[in-house]
Length: 468
Figure 1 (tube, one colour):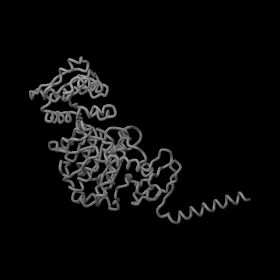
Figure 2 (figure 1 turned 90 degrees about the horizontal axis):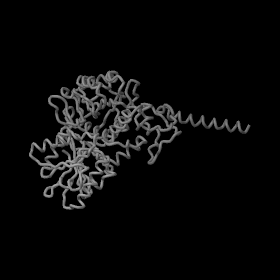
Figure 3 (figure 1 turned 135 degrees about the vertical axis):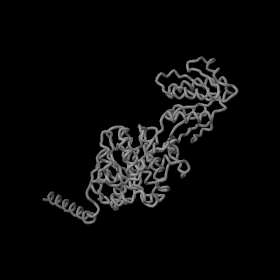
Figure 4 (figure 1 turned 90 degrees about the vertical axis):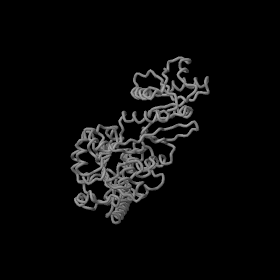
């Protein structure tokens, strides 16, 4: 009887507890969720079509510093504050100011005449947002960077409504574009796949939406559609810009080209084009080989001019051999002035070659620079870890930082200039965390990003970025 009574009292206490919770929270709590292994705050909020902020507000203990989401934890699941219906896309960002009580047909009729500087920006994301393969995982991280940018922009008084759709490779993009929320967007980030571009180009032109193509896809519509911003730069465009700036920066130097005997390298296209430009300007240069003997190798270097060294390979093993030979050369000829001119891939080799980067005044052309020591980078990495209970993927560039830079740039531009924003230099000052942006009109069509930089490792052990 004692045991039965104990169970009875336990049941009563449980009933009373549940009753109290129900009485106090029935208006705002719709259920409970038991956390499973590997689940995150971001994933749970998406599962229930909540913003992260709504989930945290319902579970204030999650806001405590150092809180960790653990398997078995029971979370309260609130009703969405905007009472969004099932036809609406998920809005899972902590930063976004909700303003969806307006009728979508009223928004559509006002589009084109409304003032983007005085209302929330309506931002759409049409990318593969899933965990099926690498494409989805990278784009989820990119999307999270967009959300963090929205959160940061809130401090400037800029509010954003974010709509996200899983535009997978085998999905039907037309089903997404048929939604009113998609048609009412001011700006859309996507797509990731070239086969979706034709439909997307027609869609944004018809509905007067800015389209940001963030990654490398074939988009011939750029030549005719003025709504398109293409961030990615083709290798030919990059080589042309790099060669122009190489010749300007090293006009008083003696170029030394080193053949690395790398049959897998594709850098011969760049070195051949650079040599042609030097020849057209009657600038002399030298050729040598990693297999050359010390005497012949040394003959390639000038004793009267600064030398700038260019390899025809971007691989780390060949770079290591080149540094070894140059170090030997400098030991015998300490008066030689030598600068290394590299490739973006070299940014992945800093653990191995950093000292030589500094020693030989290395210049590395790139469209990004991930600086793990910068305050902005560290702050965003910590914020990412806190919001999504995961670290950014160990890739270059970091996709979350790319998404942050892209969203911050375009949202702030639209807020300040409305639909006249074209991403040109000087429209507003934004120091990118990782990825610079600067656009120019492509004929009578859209706008192409032309921002590039040199990552310069100085002999004083500093790293500077020189935009060009």
